[in-house]
Picture 1: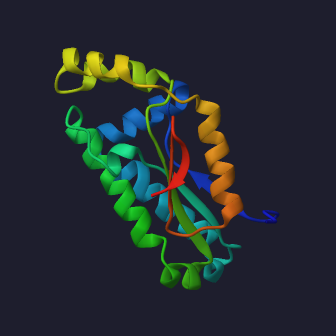
Picture 2: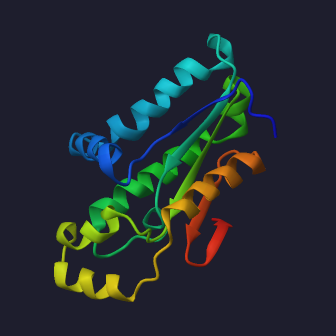
Length: 169
């Protein structure tokens, strides 16, 4: 696949400055972080508005596919990202805009977000216990998932990445 002249916007931030941005935006609502970012992508990439089409890759989570009882708010926001991605990742929107919309749904990843999770859950003790049983995936593997998603040239797809590898949901 040739990506020359195409654009991609990737939402989400697992650590560092990206995480600080994501946390600040999540504090005022997912609408700002994911929905407004995607709308901005459509404004600049839409083939009918002078753009060249492209890709929007949202960062959801496996908890958006299978909610985690210890993190109901997190699960709800990631379920929203999944639904929004599937709604825009249709042939209808692609034909109109030239933009493909997909999401990566990581499972437990070895990042600060995962290690800080227990303090933000509904039961810190239970979260620590569960976290100690989980096999973590390296962040670099998520990067490989992104490249696979782009190379497969999908639209409206959800690509899971966890200790079991890559698979479409």
